[in-house]
Length: 387
Image (cartoon, rainbow, N blue to C red; front, side, top):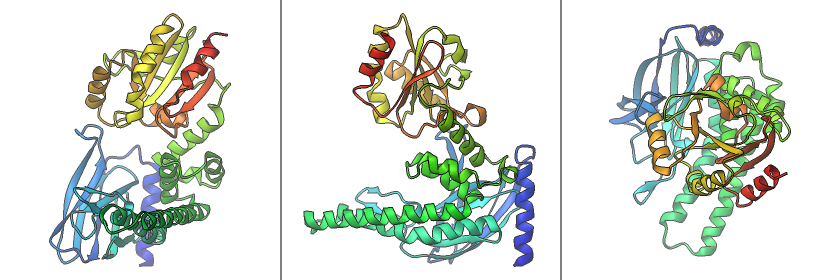
């Protein structure tokens, strides 16, 4: 076992240092999850070229045993879900999503990842065989039981018609307390393991879910081994967020935005709008509040078209879906797709909620930041651009 772990660590160090310069290489994950038999597991991969923004492979489980091989270019946190009623949290025709019913692991070129555990009411099975995966296993072994209990309370409230209103409120309070305990465990984990793939992945996930303050992230990032993880996407996204947190407050010069206009492919550069006020609108096709606010935003832009422009930043995986949404909603201004690396404007502007609207003055400095569809936003903008 010790030799296997050392070999895994060496392979991780190798692929961390050259993740962007190597061709995809094979990794393997195998093991036993007791309680799963004659069912399919589903492996999910992000893939911008796929119709839904991701692709998946099927894994067959027989008497709990499975083996899966695939190719990967660099370290990545992946997840496996399972098609079985034993793990699905159903409520009528719908279901309650929770990480506790999935297997999360860290894949990297050359990895030979092992899994052991069982499927009870949640996925009580975890990866091992190298330090990075065993670090992630420590996290999930602690929080999965609490997450599972939390979602079970939500399911009970939804499906049990015998519960009184007081009993439902009691369950809600229990669920809130369990959620707090879960988040405390996440934070305690980060205090010890921020400098790990699992820690970096967790921090990014917690930011997206508003489970951690940026001040805390900035502090934790000071303890991360930047030389070891500098090629890792999670590290780079966090580093950009911390920089954005420090440099994109009111009064700061806005980071430049450049890219292709989603609708016509024309080159766009934010600096080309100097001399006019600009509303940068971070939105997504999945964000109901973002789309509900479009008519008011368009009305306000048309009222001040002589001195104000809008630039949309769409956070979506599938270009065609964004194009259809823009056309349907009459968003007749420049829209750019948020990408990765230098095009990760969500990170560069430290966007943590949708929609986020940012007003720039004529010189490109930030005058106002607003999260959510806030009624007072345009009143505030009116005062600022009328001075």
